[in-house]
Amino acid sequence: MSTAQDPIREQLIGARRVQILDAATSVFAEKGFHRATTKEIANAAGVSEGTIYNYFANKADLLIGIMVRLADLQQLGPELTDGLHTDVRDFFAAIFRHRMSRVEASREMIQAILPEVLVNTELRQRFYQQFVLQIVTLLEQYLEAEIELGHIRPVNVPLTVRAVQSLFVGLLILQILGDEPLRSGWDDMPETLSTLLFDGLKPEQGA
Image (cartoon, rainbow, N blue to C red; front, side):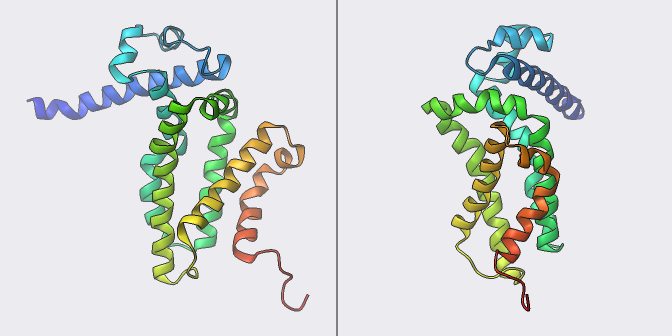
């Protein structure tokens, strides 16, 4: 009996987590991470403050949960595995486009919490360990597999992954700063990055 109920219980737990994370996203975007309180988040979610602590230990857990969901980490691994069977350049542009659209939809929230991540040592360490490193590990595994398959030439995998990540982070910061060419050309950026990474800046042969 209890085994049959487990999937339903898991769905209920997942739905409640989403409800709380949605509320936290809204409150963080409005008030910033530091000024937001769990009581305000509970009110926005329509639950008691104690209910939040049944799912998240503190505000830092909420922030990590939001960022993990934003990056769609649960799907990133399978997505990268499937990408091994497609053209690496086309896949790179597609996955970049997908992630950039998610970032654009959550730009105000990211803008509100990013300063706290940078100045709060404990939060910064947790963010790096539980969010950044997970993405790095998945991307390194993907890149190593592509090299082994002969789809791309051998490179320094850790540095290459971090170079790509830094491009993404840098673009995010420029957009937050209000860089107009980037904002107006945001939809074209995945292809621009693909061209830069796979073709470089050297002139075409015969040009």
